[in-house]
Image 1 (cartoon, helix red, strand yellow):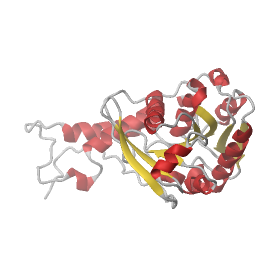
Image 2 (cartoon, rainbow, N blue to C red):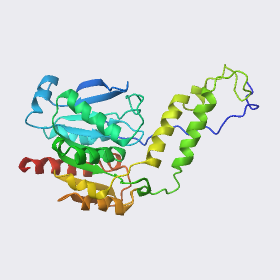
Image 3 (cartoon, rainbow, N blue to C red):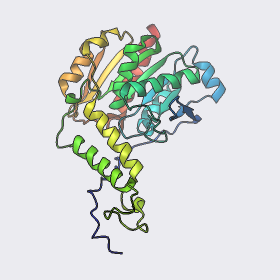
Image 4 (cartoon, one colour):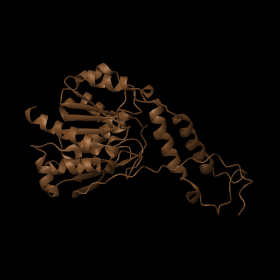
Length: 303
């Protein structure tokens, strides 16, 4: 079928993440937790105990909460989840809203909203406190959680987090342009006006061409989130009092000044820059991430 006469917009590129190791320890709970705006947050609990014993253990040993980066899912923490469970802890790992197995909901997408999602998941599962581990967007979210709800944070590990949109090094990655390409793709295929000659015949399955219109819209929103947010005053992080580690790669896409500002404003925090590594430390340097998490867990025994 010849569709060359149709004025198709520039299609967005599908996202194919680099390979990573998924968790191998037992998954004891997998549950969709409903938010008030209709979103469902896919929640996964890994433990060497059964489900009831796992939940009961949180009264004396807080779980480790892990939150992934933009457009990913909780499995990127595979080796670190394994390390925490091997050390005798349980792990609550989320797929952030509109990502992984979680759904979008209707509230405007912000880092504050996703941090609130994570707190609600802890409340629903009955965990009063957790060791917070977040990467990239997840790193921003755990900073917000530890800042605004310090009583809920047993420890903090923020990996590749930024304070402002300007804190992300562009390096040829056109966030604004890619967000617009996804919006254009969504608008083109979602416009069901049969009189519009731009449309390809109904026999053309857009899902076989590129991402679906809904996937494009969500991708655009997630990209735009990084363009417009966050806006965190570094000095506001002085309210964080738990043992903390701030990590980044030597060749991270986060400006070193922002990483340093985060660490400098959290009293007693450790700043760890992993040599010869890029932004994706949970994937490319999981042993380093696991080591710093385990140090945090040891430090909290005297906290």
